[in-house]
Length: 280
Ligand code: ZN
Image 1 (cartoon, rainbow, N blue to C red):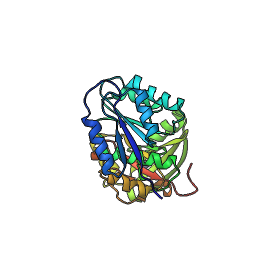
Image 2 (cartoon, helix red, strand yellow):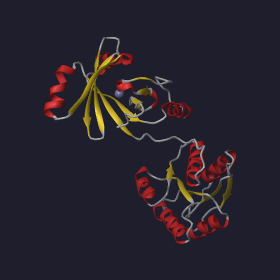
Image 3 (cartoon, protein in one colour):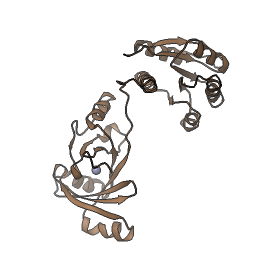
Image 4 (cartoon, rainbow, N blue to C red):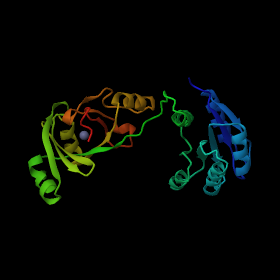
């Protein structure tokens, strides 16, 4: 059974602008949440008292004054002191990217920067609350688990393998032909991840075209994922264009799908799901 999620939107500090707070309040209501808005210029004590009194699941803090590095951690500390640290706290407003790791290390679950679609904030809160309460059925974006491999385009495996194996001392795991991509690949083990050297099998291969245009070099980054179909669906929902909208067979029997670089700031990403029982 899904419960109605209650969120307190609060504005700590001295700035006098609450357009952003009102926009997110309305967006969360439209998503089906109950939202309480504190109004402007609240102290951390007032915010924590309201959150406990209103029995909310989450607090959304909005701060434009630049005092977020003091105010946000203070709210986390007060929640802990009152035994209410199961309340999920997120933040937004004018917060430089540099401050985000610090705030998240202090217990703010996520900082949303200006321009984040409000639906993503709503989905994040929903997922965090459902996870906390052990309720299934959340549908936020799952992060990838690891870099499965980095793909490197080469003209000739014969020519480059001595460098990788003898000079760098990497272990060659195997060589195989991947007909779906018209490439011959060599995998080299490197710690928890691998390098994938790709040699085009003919001029029609995308890797051949890549080399013709840009020369040999780093070609793609493969993200190790589970449930690749679901991940593809989520990406499409987020407006990402995919080269493969359903998985194709990659090396080692993995299911793979490439994201279009036009949607990823020019990096070619591959999603890669290992066959069951071969998840190293
Ligand atoms: Zn790959």
